Image (cartoon, rainbow, N blue to C red; front, side):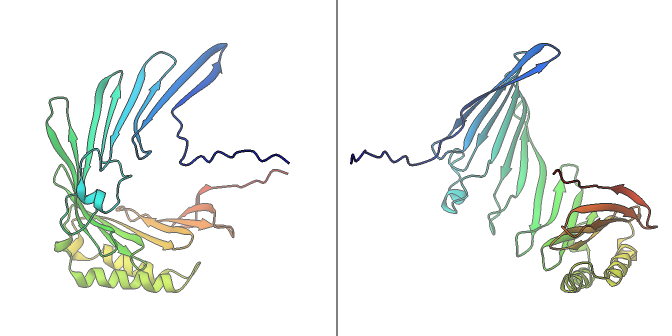
Length: 265
């Protein structure tokens, strides 16, 4: 019996180069992708060369590349903080997500940089709840949007545009959240009439009359059950026994979209 040496390979093999060939109308089209990684195996450069020799290149920077000690100390080292995109070596996008909040390690803003190195705050993430759910954000045009989380802080149940969270009475929010929690406790495919009634009362509240409101209901373990946009025209989502979306119907029961699932023998 011979005993052969065994070489142990530690680590992982990263894809660094790939070529895809397509055949179209008698022509051969080749796309080449090259990927470069940092020492922690996160991709920092992805370059794609297309059949016509045009290129697209994305460069990503992480906590170590940005010297962000807060994120490094929290072991949040795999999140791309800055992404620069080039087309044919010309920068077309330069976006950086900041994590500057003093009380948490969540995104605080997104900053864009143009070709003249002028920075613009595209959006600020103003407020989060105790579970890290985003409650308010403000876009660069100064418009704030509030998101109310229900179903025990797991799902967004209302989005209110052009308002700040502080302007909405807490009692109004609590009524909505409590109704969603009760709906969650009732289980899947329950009668949502009571919760929908609370949502309608919320939408029609005179204190919110000047805002665009979208509301949502769910079966938490399956998916969204209804979406009511600012127009008030609700769409309902019906699922089959396997939890797959089967139909989208309107408030009058008319089928707007229907999905069929077929099994191949």
